Image (cartoon, rainbow, N blue to C red; front, side):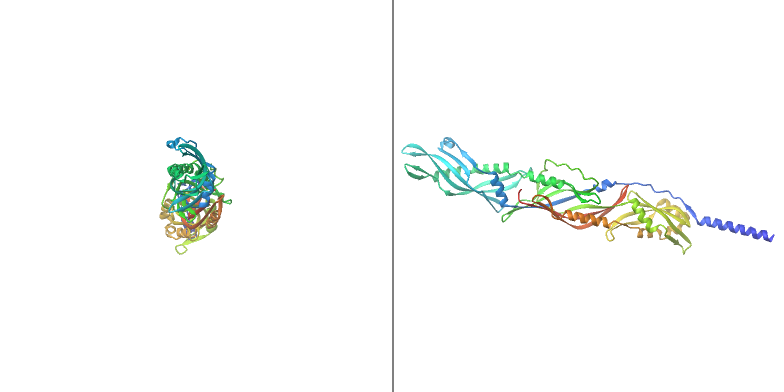
Length: 472
């Protein structure tokens, strides 16, 4: 009887032990948070940043002279009638004699136009009209205010500023040279207004700024390869052109053009950008900003992040409540739910099964990593743990994951910044057009969760200058 009692106690003890073990090794089966995303990878990569490409333009007056002299040549004015202008008995033809000289002072252009003039005049001698021809040389002077209209037309307001005789006109009557300077001077004075208007018309017709600016506009729109490794292109989508009023410094004309537009990076095949055939209207402003910014991206795919997390945590054990409870991580998976990163952790030990945590990823500029903040158990996991395993809920497990789970992305961003800076150093866009720039600041934006990857975005801020040498 005593032996049977002992046997019965042993069996009861074993049952209690088995039940105790079963109770201590609980099985978890919380509901998995639903996978969801607010944005796609393409939307993040196509995010546009409004920037201004700063174009300080310096044009030598010698180039202006060259352009004007190329357009104004040969016969520039003629009057073939003796009877017009109230029967003035005067005919004339005017040729450019030499190089038109250009200077600038007090916001005005000053032109000196050397002319050779042939004239035929009617001279009354003893009551009879005789017609004599003469040639003389003169330097006409004009001053002109130079503006650009919104449609890119050159607009000048030219006024006569006097003239100087180089060789005065005379006619020979009965072997005597008779000066007709006064008569010619009166006619010149009378026609200076007409000549000024003609100059304005010629400048407006012949100086075309649309063509070179349109070329620069289309050049700027061309995608620039930043990285063959990451197949990343820098694009500028220009929207508006700004210009400051012209200012004169010695023999230079200076102005600042600002091409305002959106910058973005794209990945994959080179974008197909077709040339445009027209320019937006020109806007005159007192000052052009020199701010430039672009988003630089680094990508961490979910499988890659899961591998990093597994290398760090799988096989690691944790104890709680003075070693009363134990768990070991058996696997890790990660995915997104809108702005949260969901961590699925498989565990064994006192608890078996899966638990889910959620946290907000952010870019840590100090360590150049994607890290997590506010990591906590998902609601369904929290409710189950509150009922059956409060020791895990109250422990440091979530805080340990938050502290130690980091995804390094600094090398990608450093590569992109280096490649961008290379593109901004002495990059000749076209003949006489050189781009230089500098990245002054890298400022974190945020981490975006897309269906395929986490994208860390930082804003690269600086300035870009495009130097234009002369008029081509």
